Image 1: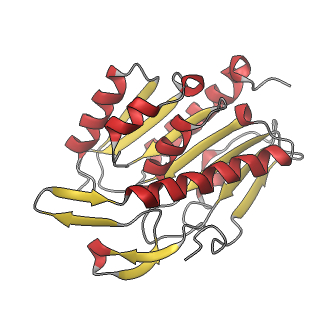
Image 2: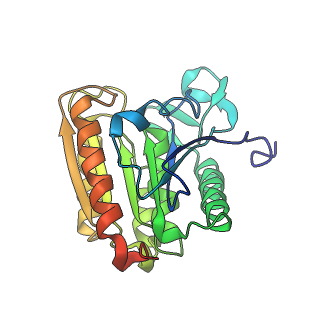
Image 3: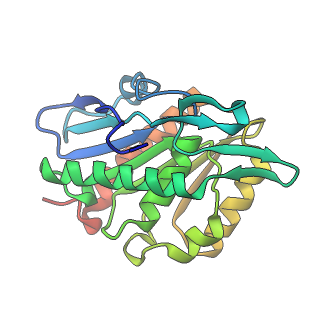
Length: 234
């Protein structure tokens, strides 16, 4: 299966005229690019500078943990006696999809330093893998309620240009799909690496809550306004 050619065009929403910033936002397992489009008005971002939100659709693939059912997934996941098992090749495939989306925005006049990668659950995992390995500076990474598979490899392969990229990470303390303790372990390993993490915990399950949306909005404001040193200037 050619996963790259099978991916449909993403959902796009623009704030303001002639967007000069972009947010590429990845959905979670079994959802699609429409899943987070309603968050755009809730963020209450100003119309200037303009922002283009891109919500891609993950490829369809069998998912072992769901009995082999075919659904949209950035990578296959299984559950064994040793815990969760993720497909490393699928993660690399999805990473390439995200890199191509970044390059697509470059071709439309938005440089990498004006692009934020965002994602929920599986999408948040791909954001970290795609963003930290990317060879050109990005504006920021936002990872919500996400596992971080193969974190040792990711820490070893983090590109120097994004070693200090602003990272917003959030997790629900009652999350039963991606346990909070698992997220804290990943966070600790990332902080040992010296990554620039802003950590948020919310009293919720595997979901995004209003306080979280407000914090994300504030973070976007800081990243977009303070990013001139990372190529956000004209």
